[in-house]
Image 1 (cartoon, rainbow, N blue to C red):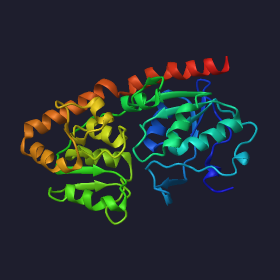
Image 2 (image 1 turned 180 degrees about the vertical axis):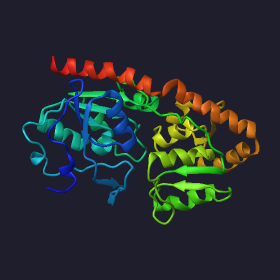
Image 3 (image 1 turned 45 degrees about the horizontal axis):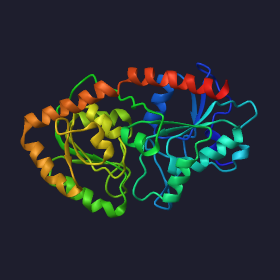
Image 4 (image 1 turned 120 degrees about the vertical axis):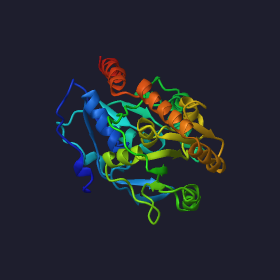
Length: 323
């Protein structure tokens, strides 16, 4: 048995009589879900991810998927779970189905993503048609509409209780493909003390902790979101909570929470330069956009809302499935 499989917790200690076995999304979300919902939440903490048809190593704290092999040997008979939690229909679907069939329990899907333009159509259709023993919750409007989810529960994003001097002009976060490197570099190079953060060998390094990310965002004036997937990633939401002015490319996810009063939305990456220049020249606009972005988090993404929304869903799911 490979070493990352050994990290699965076999004996479950229950909280509120709900126990979840999860395929990981990212460390921040996994920890938040377990802590705030007070469920017994266990997942594989190391593994591999398929990226553009290749197998690559993923370093913490970035999202990673554990490709479970020898699944029939994973669990002792005393391991008890109520749900399989799957975060990504396209990438995690096969693993979630295998575990659900092995353990005879339903799948809970948290949809963070709408299907990308590069996603295989046959896999998308397969995921949409498979509705038996599946409960679907979306974390944003775009995913909700794409997958016909039962409801939306926004992520919980902590808001820093302090401010810092904004010494950096711009920041971009992401794990980019090699052919995207030059484009990303061209976006940030014109600006003083700009930063690219992510697992991009030869270009940038990932942040080492959430606290480090938060600190750097509090020192950043403008956060650039070059949306390649229809989602609201944690680093974008964290930038909003830190009061960064947001410059983002348009897609259904960004347009579901942003308008001209709380972000600078552009039609394509080609328009980012002009948008950043406009915001940098106008401090009042920069402050207004940053404050408005933080207000979105305060209104829709608080930890209290996360708990109050998830608790009844988890209890209802268990009652409906096991009654």
